[in-house]
Image 1 (tube, rainbow, N blue to C red):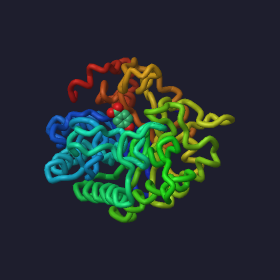
Image 2: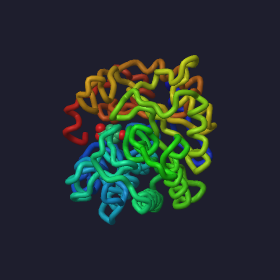
Image 3: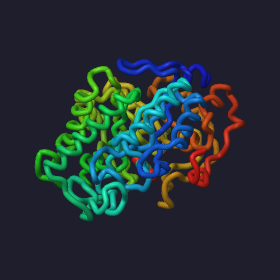
Amino acid sequence: MTAQDTLFRPFTSDTLTLKNRIVMAPMTRSMSPGNVPNDKVVDYYRRRAEGGVGLIITEGTIVDHPAASGYPDVPAIYGADALAGWARVVEAVHAAGGKIAPQLWHVGAVRRPGVAPGGDTPGYSPSGMARPGKVTGHAMTQRDIDDVVAAFAKGAADAKKIGFDAVEIHGAHGYLIDQFFWDGTNARDDAYGGDLAARSRFALEIVAAVRAAVGPDFPIILRYSQWKQQDYSARLCDTPEALGAFLGPLADAGVDIFHCSTRRFWQPEFDGSDLNLAGWTRKLTGKPAIAVGSVGLNSDFLPEDGTGAFNAGEPASIDNLIERMARDEFDLVAVGRALIANPDWANRVKAGDFAALVPYDKSLLATLS
Ligand code: PHB
């Protein structure tokens, strides 16, 4: 099968229809001064929609809580100015024939005081830890938990109101929701700590609140990962049985699509099968799954040597990806850095014009091209 037969088939689920299987991966760009997406942000996303992407998942957008932001100039998903900016992004993407979901984000203990907005607010997290054994911030009270759950629900409701096609909840990579999932950062002895089922309670409350806010027909994507930025080898689940037990309640709470973040999409998740994390997720939950991880490039987003995110890379073959899509191992594939370098990545691939794809280099992060 060719890329045309696999990547460029329409996608249909209970709640979402897309013209093809290509998703723009969420990527922090820190290009929204005052936490408001501006004209450059509008044009940046418009170019990817014009370039043929079926679904754009935006960079992380901070929910309305004082500790949500961990990085400068990331866009908010609250406040009149930010929402007006996003409404223009949505309009531009729709006019170019694409669909778009904001990623709803709270960084938890990754935050350091001083990052705007939020002033001196410390990092908030289940047990005050950004990494195992090291308390650096505030351990959340029940009131804090309720506030953050409400902030996610409000962000989702506003996203729907201004025309977004879906929302993604960021539950991955060692940020707040994942700090609850991970036993390394969750040492609580109340209902939000204990075994993985209990450590999932916070996420389940967020998903249920988002579902209640957007109604039954609006797509909710949950991004999760085994790996943490604090520890690439960390895992929430060591077996398919454990993964099924983890994901089932999240699906029941209202997740329609799982976005299964791995650093390399081709790696098997468990011994004895070729299936990657998205493949297992689809098989175990019956829900559509998005795969992601170094698609179209010969390098990892986060290199082993700790030299920071958004590592450079050369174009790489997508034959393996096409074979997996042809087997319906997963439903959708998210493309990250290759889409920063090549806004028209999807159209180029559709045309078989692989020779036109250019390498991705960190210098591209300096502007929103
Ligand atoms: C990053 O900005 O490097 C970043 C942001 C969110 C993630 C991972 C990395 O989930």
